Image (cartoon, rainbow, N blue to C red; front, side, top):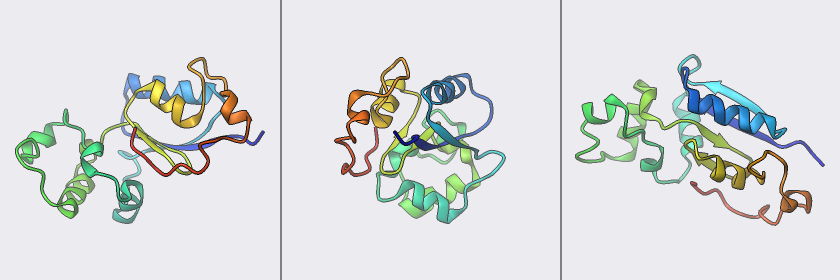
Length: 142
C-alpha cells in the first residue's frame, strides 16, 4: 500500500494543532508541515488552497483581527478577505489539512480521520486498503 501524504498548515505553537499533527503522523501519514507564521502563504498559494470553496469556512472567528476588520458585521468581497488574510495570518483557521483531493479545516480528529481514511486509533480503514471508494470524490470542506 502506498504511503499517504497530506499538507498541514498551521501557525505558531498550539496544543490542539500539535495533537492533531501527532495523531496524523502516528497513523503513518507523511505530512508536509508549514508554519505560515514563519513561512507566509503567497497570494497564489492562498488562492490555490481556498479554491472555489466558501472563504467563510477558512475564517478564524476567534482572531482579534476578525472583529478589528468588522468581519463579524459584514463579510467583504472575497478578494478583500484574501488581502486581509495575507496581511494577518491569524484570520485563517488552523490547522488546515489537505490531501490530494480533500481539505479539512480545524481540529476535529474524526473529520480528519474520515478524510484521510483512518480509524480514530490511527490505523487505515478497510476502505483505504480496498483502493478507496472515495478516490473520485471532489474537494469538500469538513
